[in-house]
Length: 301
Image (cartoon, rainbow, N blue to C red; front, top):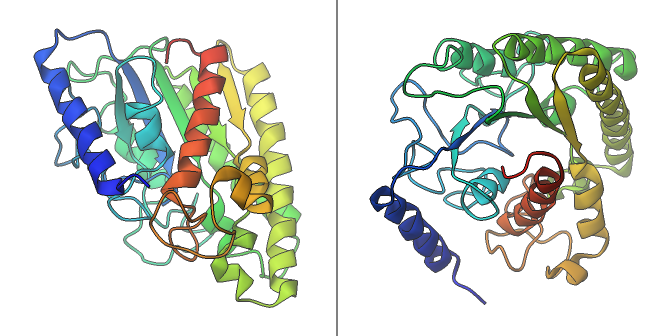
């Protein structure tokens, strides 16, 4: 079994070596989402992504939902990448799409709307420090887990409420598009109804959340398809994390995990790093899938 900290140290060392190499033309990745994506990047304090650290801050791999361990953004930036990627990760743990619609667990949590505002107020104008173009940039959105987790049990039509959430979601996507963004990646909601947290709840609760997740994902896929067709110059990719994570949970030993319920930070053994977040090992499968999607559509991202 590879020691996780040893592997991270090796990758971090390789990243630092990049500073001695003549600067190539980087790609730019602007990520938005919740704890499944967050690495602790702070656009206000900096530094911005650079050759010494393509994530800018904090040091690789950042602070993810699993601790000082990698998630799919780390893997895609530093392991599965085909070119140098400068990653501006605005994602924030606990985020919802709109804090007025679904209250996050703390009032200090930056919603998707807040994250987009941070982007608009910092690098959207393509400053000299971040000379992105429509061609060399990617904008990703992985959101909805907390919106559903904090509301699926409420009264009223969840289908109608999903539409309200997605109206807000794509109004924010439109703001990003208006800055010149053209390459988009949308990731759907994974089966968190099968997380250890939810497995401790009654079966009816698990089934209730599962239904809302499935409906949200269907509506999201339709919205992405519509956005792709209706907006000039857009290339919108849709990654089905739900199907991949379901496959892993259905066949954990096939993917190298001991079972689908035990949790811990060991990337090689567990599907979950805690009672609600997939492990670094599962994230690595998502990253491999997405890198293959990029190879077909955004070469050589």
